[in-house]
Structure formats: structure tokens, C-alpha cells
Image (tube, one colour):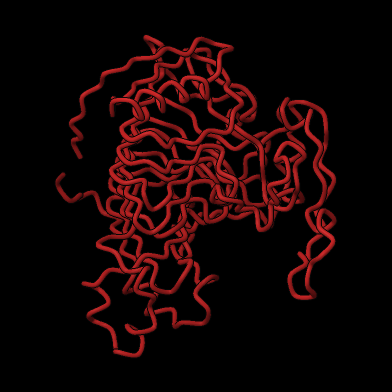
Length: 375
């Protein structure tokens, strides 16, 4: 994908400064004259919840030798890395939300996305997008007040109140106790709304555990190089997603219940639906039909290292489990060491009883050979 834009405003964010402050300047420039903005960010940790709502915005690591490496079990970053991170997760109400009730973990931010993209033609290069909720206790989280969401509202209906009582989270800054399965819940690092079209991530790292990378139907994103890391359904939604030459990292530990499903797709295509019986075809909501689902080209699947996770495990990885039975996901030329991938490749846990051959053979394609489709 080639996007031609005229970049009229260039901003620099120094270590310790605010990326949100630069975004405010970008919004003002676009509102006044339609100018596009590039923001160069000096290496460091930026603990901010960001909304990218300016068309054509570019975020670029300002280092001459940029890195997206993490270390010490995912707590720290390389000296030349830029990390954009926040800590909100499903199941808790946070005082810092200032009254915006966190029902379902979604709010208006698509599973509490640390960075939410709502504008077209967003571009990021050599940036780490993270949600720290299932990785470590950040300084901002330690300073916040949070309560179990089931106790944060008094007027639940009988069928509405959450069934799970959330655990009390540790308050020590940097604690990796939250990497254990006991604390696991949904928390997005990067999400795209339906208006986020023609977006590009070049050599970026997106990292979370469950539901880390999300896209609405209508969103379109290209990922080239870099790392997409997570565990349960960590790349999910109905977006059009094209991923090329990227490391897909299973963020699972040694606990027996800790599994990885790379994708949870819910986009159907007219071309493939046309081959189905009318009853099946007509059961797919029209808003979930698109020109393409998720495609992964020449990617590598591996387990997390000790730099990325405190207690990295090696349980076999599923390529995905469709969020809906019509969820279309394609892998071409995927590479993985022996034993990394589950022999079944696809799990049917989210397909509501639809027959295994239909889901496996029709929606998902896998080429384990060395021959790749030209690009």
C-alpha cells in the first residue's frame, strides 16, 4: 500500500514530554488548514492513553538506531525504543476514568485500547504499542484506585451482573505477578474503529495478552515487519488486515491452562459466501461481510522469550479460533519450529457448534511449504 500525503507540520516529543500534547497541536493544525502531521518521538516510556483522531498522522521513533526490543520479562525496553502504554483492563472500574463506566471492558475504546485509532491513513514506525494490564503493574496503575466492576455499580439486573469476582491486583510498581493466569483478562494495546482505513504499522511491536490487537468491520490495516504478541484471541475483529514478514509471538507461561490462539476473525467475504447453502449464507449479518478478512504472509510463529515474559511456556499454538463461524483468516508461508503449532492448527471454541470440516476447510487456509505467493 502506498499512501501519498503532504506533510506540513513536524513535531518532536522529547523524553518525559507528552505525546498527547503533540496530538493536540496536530488536531489544531488539521482543523485550521487540513495539514497532516508527523510526530517524532524520542526513546522512552510514554504512559498515556492515546486517541489518534487526526487523518494522516504519523508516529515515528526519532532514534537514529530505533529498536522495538523489550527486556526483563517485558517490564523494560531497549534504550532506543519508544513505548506507548496504558493499563486499563476488563473487570475493573478505575477512579481515573472519572465517571465513564467501564461496563464490559469496552467503554468507547474497544476493549480499553491503550491507543485507539479512529482516523484514516495512520502510520507508525518503530513504535511499541502496549497494554501493561497482563504484563506488569505500571506507575500510573499503582497510583490509581480500582475496584471489581461487579461492586462498582448498584443497579445491575439479575442477568447483567458479572459472574466473575475480579482478584485484588498487586500495587507494587513493576510487579509481574499479573502475568499469572489467575489475573488474566481482556485488555487491548491497539484498536482500530471502522473509520480507521488505510493504516500502516512498519516494524512496530503490538503487545498484550488477551485481545491485544482489535479492528472493527470497515477498518483496514497493513502490518509490515515487527512483532504482534499476545495469547488468547489476541488479533481479533472483522477488520481487513494484511500482515507481512512479522513475528507472531505466543505470550504464554508454563501454567497448564495458558494457551495461545493467534486470531479470532469475524469477517466474511461475498466470494466465499456465494459457495454456501442459502440458509448458511443468509445467516451472516450484512455488516460483517467485507472484501477481505485477515491475511498473514511469510510470517514466523514462535514462543515468547525470557526478555518478553517472566515465565515463558511452550504449549502448542493454535493459528486461531473463529470469533464467528464465518470468520475468515488466511495464512500463507507461515514458519514455525517443530512443536510450536498445535497439530489441529484451528480451534473451534468460538464457533457455536458449527461442524469442524466447514470451519477448517472453508474459512482457513494453511501453506506449510516453502513456496510463497509472490508479492
